[in-house]
Length: 120
Image (cartoon, rainbow, N blue to C red; front, side, top):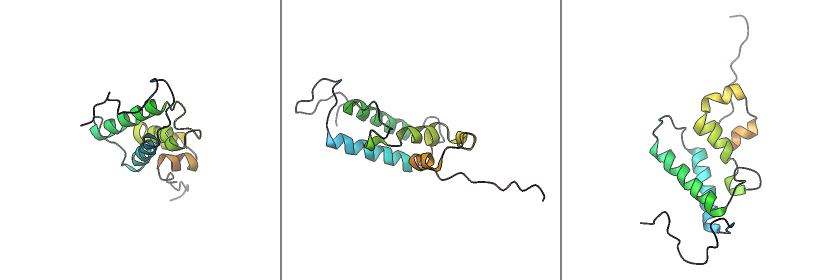
């Protein structure tokens, strides 16, 4: 298997240096997209979600992407929205009323507007 601390070959530079690694960049994008499409976690001990988040964290550290989740980082675009509205606080969506664009980035459907017509 592949060890977590292994350094695979090639010159990697210091651990704090930004790395131009197209494979890690593509994997980060794929993992964020998979997180966006995964069903919302309902179990507090969701091992699959925990492992996916650890992998994303490692990729962010590897690529030194402190701005991941912003428009400055296309591979991680929407990561913050996915984490907030899909993974951590899905029940807060109706209260926070995020924009359709934020919900799209989070991979969430637009909120259902219930008709509150007075008589009935």
